[in-house]
Length: 140
Image (cartoon, rainbow, N blue to C red; front, side):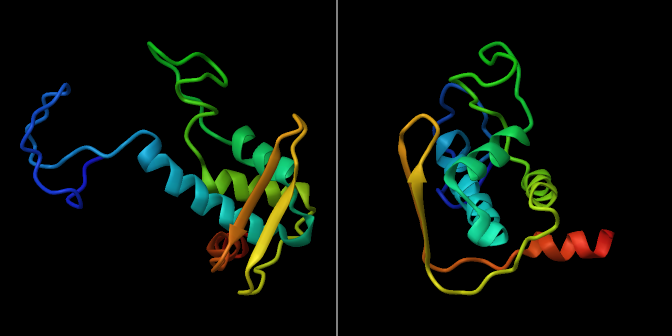
């Protein structure tokens, strides 16, 4: 969770870590990772992907975090847990019967209503190729 991007760790702060690197964790670090995994899954799922399927695949395959402030299962501190991109891809692969695609490089908008009624959308301006698909082929 250390990075050189933000400069020196001059203020020891509440964690008292004088390692010279500022810490980078929490939602600031989780959001870009979650977006990247979502983009890969959307591309892999192609036209079969829905907002509910995307949310279910990502949350059901996450590694639960438990501890002093985190309960077993979903909780407001750690959500569903740590995203596991490979497990999410493998789950999607199984759910779609192996029918996942590498997709094209056209922009794609995924929109719809979740089961709770919230409007969900995600715009992919430059979808990444599904590198996980290549790993799946090599393992088979």
